[in-house]
Amino acid sequence: MGAQKLFEQEEQRRLLSNRLATTFFLPGHGGLMDQLLEWRKEFPILDNTVYLISHSLGAMPRRTRDRLQEYADMWSTRGIRSWEEGWWMMATNVGDKIGTIIGAGPGEVVMHPNVSICQSIIASCLTFEGKRNRIVSESLNFPSNLYIYHSLERLGAEVVSVPSDDGISVPLSRMLEAIDERTKLVSVSHVIFRSSFIQDLKAITRRAHEVGALVVADIYQSAGTVPVNVREIGLDFATGGSVKWLCGGPGAGYMYVNRDLWPTLQPRLTGWLAHEDPFAFEVGPNKYADNIYRFLNGTPSVPAMYAAMSGYEVINEVGVDKIREKSIRQTSLLIDIAENAGFKINCPKNTVDRGGTVVIDVPHGQQVTTELLRRDFLIDHRPGAGIRVAPHFYSKDEELDLIVREIKTILETKAYEQHSAALAH
Ligand SMILES: Cc1ncc(COP(=O)(O)O)c(C=O)c1O
Image (cartoon, rainbow, N blue to C red; front, side, top):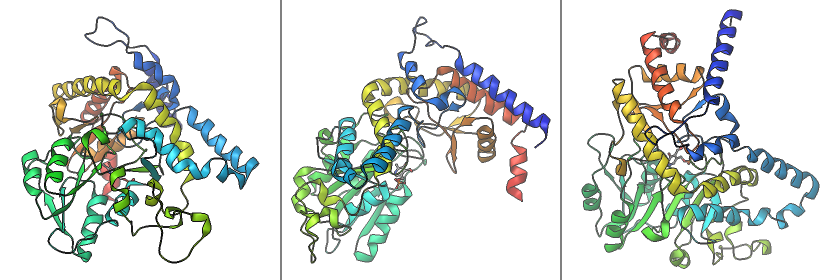
């Protein structure tokens, strides 16, 4: 890269940082300060990027660095004693911090590396012989979940995929009609990852229970931005991860299992930590623990849990209700700005139906995204949907304006073309 180009990029970064450093007021609120902007200090990356990608990777809290240091200190000074002094209990102690966000009780949430593992453990508790062999799921569910269910066809499962007409939403009536006495498991995403559409978990769970089916909700795209209360809804299972709205980074997935079900479930995807007395190292069939540990398998991802804790603490401190209130205001504002600029919106416009992400369909979406990333505007693109833009509690209104203007500039100047050429090679 030439010196001139490097200089221009540096200059661009400096200008962006300057713009982000100024104070902003709520539009239409008589100059009221947005109190949540106080949290910006806690997230270093916000100083020099337009960070609108919390649906994919939430910003790292400053205190996460201290937690990771703590982990290293513990390992290097306490060594093997670290397990007894905390590490063994982390799978539930850390899970409890998520429990308070999602309405689960103490000891009802257990940590795993990711959602795909959690969903596989749940599936491994069930059999699919006989007449009740159906898994009902929306066609817009996250692909991992669907891959797992389809793999169960080898064991007799029948997957019922409930279609969407517009690629954004799934009609509730269609979901409810698909659930009947042949249904063993209903699997739904609370918020659809591609379109941000919120599904009615209460109505779906009610219907499933009426016909004797179990329900697992993937709450990855809701926990931390849309209020969710697993107990109030009456969910049987919930799975999620920490990478996105919870600002916890990778490797810290979690699962909730309704405690009334514990005695009835014996996961086939299991391991020594699910045993009632793991350190007896008994051979033979597993004698499952009578608590949430029965859903564990092998050694948990300790460093990932250290990394994740600060995010949960921050979300608990801010409060999901406040986050949702701001998210509704900012996503509505962003939709207005994008529509005024002439872009199509590929997510629900009705606030009740919309999670924390706005999907903006722009021409040459993938190439425009590459150029935005190069300019320190952090967002992503999903084929068939558009550019996903997600303000979180730490976002400024000004950033919403900035990103739409940047997309327009990139399109007008055809700056995306260099990436089209790169893709063609
Ligand atoms: C709704 C939803 N479920 C599951 C996943 C993936 O989960 P994991 O990578 O933890 O298996 C994602 C995104 O990465 C998602 O948005």
